[in-house]
Image (cartoon, rainbow, N blue to C red):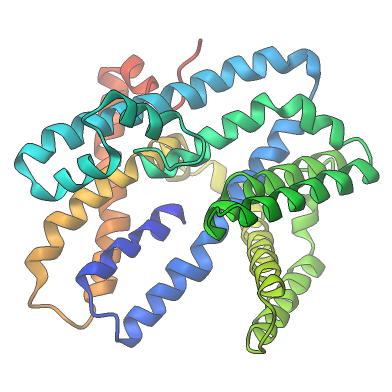
Length: 339
């Protein structure tokens, strides 16, 4: 879903005044963004399931290999590609200037600054997740009882108000650090409340509540509401969509599917695909799209399919041969490196 979310890059090549564009923009903007809060939710659930402060060191050590190493490796790869590619492709020189890659301070700012997107944009999730892992002993304290959980959410809301007041954009406030940390925390709450993984999401009642909530939000948005209530409705909307998404994923994640070879292969390369799609899918899109100036009807659908399926197929063809030829090198990029 995150790969499909970034497939909205095809819009620059397509007429946006068509029903086709309206349909795909609904998918890009309204459906797919729920994948990110779901990722943080699932990560929080898995982090605090059987959590023990005695195992903190081992958890962090594993996450350095799984998160920090590939985060740095992918960003270095992007820097090299942008610097070399900008010599031959003028489009990439804009990226070099935008990221200030000609200076060491510019590179360090983009890679290590917590309040800016990294050079490999989607990896902001990986960076944030590692920071939350480091903070997990503090977060675990607030997971102990209902009062501490409510207090933690209240603190996050105060922080959100402060960030907005001093000039941070709403998008930054909702993604990092407040919104993503809240979803991570809620996942931790669920891990303490429900012993069976995602048991709550297997309830048909939860499905109906989520759908009803989305309907109520849709109706409320058609009425002139204060900006604060509209902002809250945005967060609630994302939460309900996330509940639906995790519910569907939980229902689909059956033993029969797990035994499927294709499922196993896709699961195996999922980190690589998440981290690398900005590179592989984008290159494919920008190579093919300019050759389709003759195509109007169905162009956005075709380019979205090229971005999504074509990009994943290319990553498949890169990942598995590389795994056989150079597994240790691949370990730097797919989160499997063991320290």
